Image (tube, rainbow, N blue to C red):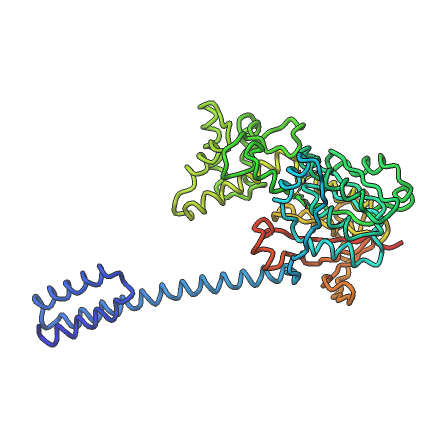
Length: 459
Ligand SMILES: C[S@@+](CC[C@H](N)C(=O)[O-])C[C@H]1O[C@@H](n2cnc3c(N)ncnc32)[C@H](O)[C@@H]1O
C-alpha cells in the first residue's frame, strides 16, 4: 500500500484508540476504500474525521471527570454535615451464663444483632458529670445497648426498658434479669415493659421508685428502626429479599398491616406514603401498578410486592441494585405508615425530654433522613420553648434569638465537638455523630446511623 495510505491508517488507529476493537477495524477498512476511490482528497477527509473523534473522546472524558468531581464534592459536603466517630467500636458485651437451654438459644439469637455505635452511646452516658443512677432504654431490642449500660455503671440503681415487640422483649428480659443478679449495686432494680415508647410517661408513673418522683431519669436511649432479628424473620414481612406475609408490624397486637394499606387504602394515600415516607421518585407509576394489582386480587406477600417493584424498575436504573434500592424505599414507606413511626417519634421526643432529670441526657440513633430530620428539628424546638407555649412564628423567632452555637471541646468529653445552647437544654451534637469506618465495615446496618444527643438544663 502506498505511503500515504499507511500514514492515514496510523492516523486513524492513533485517534480511535479509545474505541472498541471492532470499530477500529471497521475504520481501517473504510480508510482503505476511501483511498482507492479518492487518492488525492482522502488524507484531508481522514484528518477531519480523526479530529472529530478526538474531540468527542475529550468531551466524554471531561463529562466523566466532572461527574467524579461532583461526587467528590457531594462526599465532602456530607462529611461537613456530620461528625464521623473516631472510636473503633471494639467493645464487647460480657455474656452471662444461663443454664436453661431455651434461654441460651434465645441468647444466641439475640447475639446476631450487633448494637450500633455502642462505644459512642457508652461515652454519652459515662462521661456526663452527673452520675447515671437511673436509665431508660425505649427500644430494648436484643438488649445490646442495655446490657452494656447496666454492666458499665455500678452506681446504676434503676433500669427501665421497653419494646413493642414481644419476641424482642422476651429476649431482652432474660438478658437483663440475668445481669440484675450480678449487679454490684445492692438496691439495683430492673423493670421491663411490653409497650410503645409513646407511653413513656405513664410507664414511669407505674414504676413506683422514689428517685423518679424526686427528679426524673438521668439517661434515656432510643435506638430506632428494626433489629436484625426482625429483619431476618421472613414472617415479619420486613425483608426485601425473603418472601413472607405483608405484615411489617413492630407490635403484633396492632391492627394495621402493610397488606391493608396496599389493598384497601385510598389511591391518593398509597401515593402519598410512597412519595413522602419512601422519598420514591417513581411513586406515581408504583401507585398505579399497586392499584392494578388490586383488580387481580391484591398483593398478599412481600414477594408479590417485589415483583411489582421489579416490573417498574428498568434495568437501566442500576439493574438488581436499582430494584433493591426502590424496594428498600417502598418497604421503608410502608413500615413507617404501619407503625405510625414519624408522629410517634416526634411526640415521644418531647415526652422523653420531660422525663429527664436536670442535667440528664437523651440519645437518639436514627437510620434514615426522615427520622433524623425530626430528631434534629424537635431538639431545636425543645431547647428553646416548650411545646405548648406561643404560636409557631413566635417560637421560630425565639429559636433564632436564643440559640448560641458553641465550638466546645470539653477535655473530659472528647466526643463533643459543637453544641447548641438554649433556654431548656443543650444539643450536644450540632452535627450528628456517624459510625467509624471500622464499624461500618463490620456492621452494614450501621452505615446509615446518626446519633444525636440533647441534655436538659441543670436547674
Ligand atoms: C434497632 S432495635 C434496638 C436494638 C437494641 N438497642 C440493642 O442493642 O439490641 C429497635 C427496637 O425498637 C423497637 N421499637 C420500634 N419502635 C418502637 C416503639 N415505638 N416503642 C417501643 N419499641 C419500639 C423494635 O421492636 C426493635 O426491637
